[in-house]
Amino acid sequence: MTKLIGDVILDVNNISLRFGGVKALTDISFNVKEHEIRAIIGPNGAGKSSMLNCINGVYTPQEGTITFRGQTFDHMNSRQVAEMGVARTFQNLALFKGMSVIDNIMTGRNLRMKSNILMQALRIGPAEKEEIQHRARVEEIIDFLEIQAYRKTPVGQLPYGLQKRVDLGRALAMEPQVLLLDEPMAGMNVEEKQDMCRFILDVNDEFGCTIVLIEHDMGVVMDISDRVVVLDYGKKIGDGTPEEVRNNEEVISAYLGTSH
Image (cartoon, rainbow, N blue to C red; front, side, top):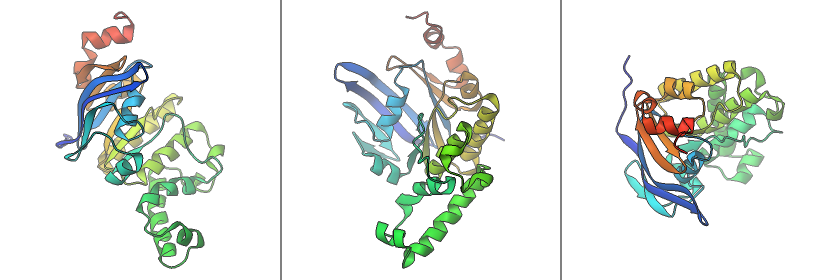
């Protein structure tokens, strides 16, 4: 069955980011289309995570704009981005290790809760009903990620691969339109990578989520991505389908080191 890719949902235009005298990104432009899996690849230090940090409001670029669903911004804060429907997982897990799986994923529902913190804590008035509804949604995500057996387990006691699933679950709990995945398979064994690939494809298909993916495993990138943008030393050196990128001489040189 042919996958239906929509119109551009996210447009990155001429983004430049500097830290003092260090150029992290230089004049980067690319777009992301609705319902696609868009990979960002490149050697270590290429600027991939910096690019995600610009998209989700952690960094403010000195130049350029980001357009999301027709609205153009020169900078946004992280809460604005989340409220607009962009969620993020992190290369270094930022989970609450002492909290259970279900409570970690529940934190992803905070933006959607209307009751104030006091009402939530005391579970009074509409807060209790609201929490029951949100927990039902979280249970669906737990079932989807096949981690039912660990619902009440403190996240810090789980193997690394399962902690990565919880991180994905927390992002999914925000019901994002665009999901930013920063090396979701880093540190995983082959079996864990296969599982994560399956979940990413299912999130894209069943949840209808547009995905922007940073990943070092080229086999994974070429297998699951619709389009790939390649960064090297903060500059864009390639952009196209996996096949086009695979045959791009500048990309080959960057990865083999012959251009340096």
